[in-house]
Length: 184
Image (cartoon, rainbow, N blue to C red):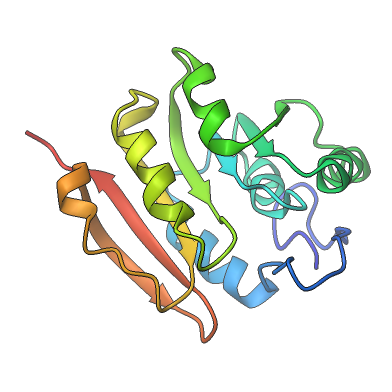
């Protein structure tokens, strides 16, 4: 796994080994950031269920003004810090240690242009986290939320939470769902 583009281009990133970890492949990450590119320069990026931090690090490398990483696992928290240090992208980076759904309410008045979330698959965390996000005012008016999930994940509840899906990309064992808050 590596940084695809920007200041830290081609720098390798470490990841935790194991069955519970699904690092986003370079090809998937490249497709994701081709879609996100208009949002990235100068944006405030929130990386939920951050894992190795590769998505937030990619955003910083491509010009995000800041990235906040939320991760509860201690090993992966240390890995995020190591990857940030190695890529020299610590400026503008903040690691918040804790469970995503507990941390969200503590973000206060912070607002983000892009919120990326990649929870463990098949645990229903997408719906739970999106439910919390729907009640918070942390997404900028023209901001977007990207959810990485299993292709089998049901998103039929989005409308009742006040979100609209405007794009979807499938990659075999995963998909990205692009959401905006419904206006009015």
